[in-house]
Length: 435
Image (cartoon, rainbow, N blue to C red; front, side):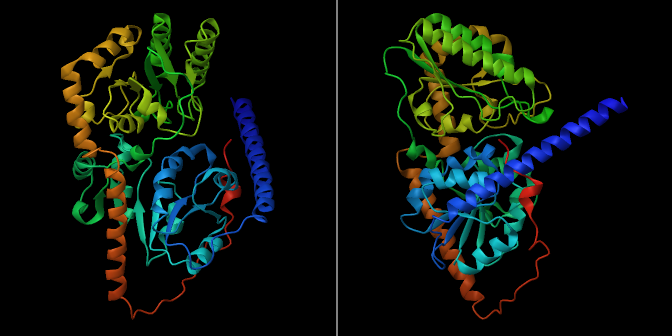
């Protein structure tokens, strides 16, 4: 046992060294790239999106690209990155300026130069607290999706001045879970502005096939969050749909699928291989293995979506089109069945091979349609085109007005510089980019 433990420690040490070397290579490449980039001018940025994560979680901020680009027409917006690999990607694809603030001292310099009024956060990264120390701006949690997962009711909501939430369902969820949290004061409902900006072109030619989006989440890093269905449902439901000759599958697995569980990773690979074989046998099928960053066409184009308990449920729900939710195989997976999940169209593991008649039912059933319409309105309110974007912009204007009011009250306050024990901290070497 001692020998096994030593081998494990050696492997861990080697992995850490490889990651550190990769991080430094990324940083050196980025510094050369930045020599040719023009950063935002001092005094020009009023709204920042703080994203301290690595590239593996870029999907969380990509969901906000289009709404941020729209908002930038009215207020200057920039994305703050703390990771070299993430910054390189942001420089290539972000629709608003990105700034690389590796150390806290860099962050402090940026804060002192820019008239920040609002800082948005799309996740609960621990480094968010390095930004929270700065006052005289609103720290606002906008999340990276709507869902009924336990992540949506974490007590960390209280760390933010405000939170932008989707609708009444989110408000009631927070009211049930959080003690002494003033919802009237700290939350603003905006719906799902991303639904006004569905992105991407269809990678297939539409025909009379029924398009089924299968968008499973990853396996999770703990039993309570084991929502992934690739190993429990995925292979059987994909095989059943491929066999009909009248369905087109759009398979969009979570980017982290298989990072924890080898069997989950292998099941994912077998599904991809099955789609490739089906396309080779019949090129007209045009099944899609979707690994692209653009999210939108998949949700809008699919006749039926099959997804796990994740934010993808609610992205799809905002379209008002049929959806099936895979019931987790693990009894330890936490399910908040007080909202939509109490009345959704569940797909149990043992039903996966019978997916074809189930898909047919949710497409044609009047009862299923009426139930879906009820929950769409409860979670997102009015989903007419443009309404959620207008609500998002209105929320920002309300935050600006509140900033003006509070700033006027404190106009005579003296601002003093605080010492920062983390000024010389090199955080990246401790947590390099994941690949």
